Length: 304
Image 1: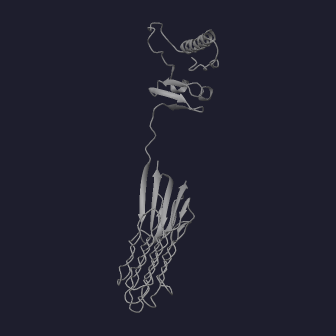
Image 2: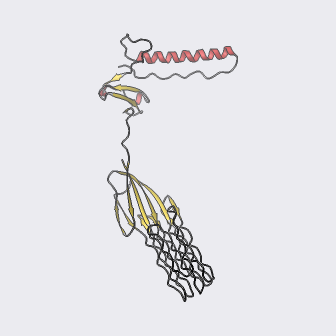
Image 3: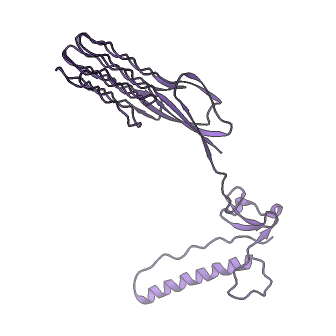
């Protein structure tokens, strides 16, 4: 059986010095390359009629006659049964130039409720992104009620906490803290809600945004009720503005964020989408707060 590949001899190291020394080194390199070409040529089957400029024929084998791939890592040969080139990866002969099957994705977005996510057959890995619900905003005016906290969104052990509700405070509206992410490769805390000023006819504090969705909520204009966070953004609600009594309300905090890549996923996972927190009641001569934006879960499966 013809030997498909000859080992490549090492070239002599580059040399410095006189012109004659450099010429000698170049001649030595040339002799090595000529010898290498001769040995490759002698390993290949030829009928003796090829012109000098013709490409060298490649060693050809039936699949069953290919030599052990472990003996010729990196070697290339022609498989007559497959009618294509094959190469040795050091353990087996593989077709050259074949394109791996394209990987497809299946994206599922959960915007409400809870349940079980069933993983698509053939999924090799998946990523899950989770946003918690935004906090509700407080009411304005004397005795205005605090907004309630948003709920956490969960996917298995991955969690994105809900934003904290805004409060009226004794002197001025206080924005709620952002929810915290946990259990992921990436965990980010939501934005703090804005505070309301202790003065008449002032806008309410803004609602904090949830990471990576880029949406926060404008506070209400003076003398108006709070502004609800947009659904499925995890944004906190904007607070009620102040009228003839103070202070303006505090905005709700944004929901947290968490992202996890799961290799070799299980067949199913439990999930729950967090709701936005409710708005606080209106105080004396004040206005009610609003509800925070609900959370979201996005699952991206990679199928081979």
